[in-house]
Image (cartoon, rainbow, N blue to C red; front, top):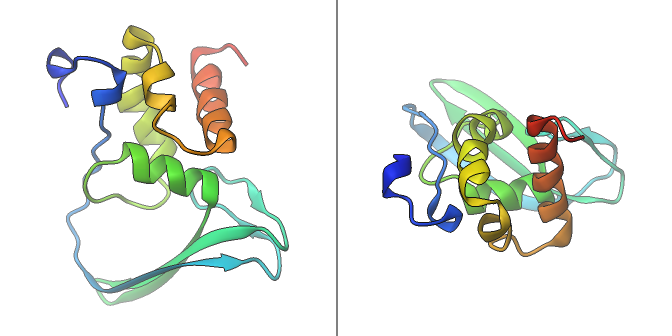
Length: 132
C-alpha cells in the first residue's frame, strides 16, 4: 500500500507475491508432541505448546509447515491477501516497519489480541531499528 494513502499505522497492510495455486490446503491448531521449529520466526515450538500446522500440495509438491501461534496471529493481522510461508518477518521489515517509524507502531500493535504477539512484534521492530 503506498504510504501517501495511509492515514495511520492501523491502515498499513503487508502484501506478498504468491502466484501459485494450491491443489489442496489444510490448516489446524495442534499440540506439539515433540519440539518443532516455527517456519516464520525460527523459534522452537516446545512439546505441549499449541501451534498451527498447515499442509498442502502446490505445483505437484506436497508440503507441511508449522507456525507458532504468535507468528500466526501477526500474519493474520498484518498480511493482506495471500502469503508465502517463511517470509513473514522479511515482509514486515521491508513494508511495515518503515510505516511504524512514521506513524508509531501503537495503532498496529493494538490490532493484536495477545500480549505475547504484541511483545514479539515489538521485539522484532526494536531489533530492526537496532534498539535491541
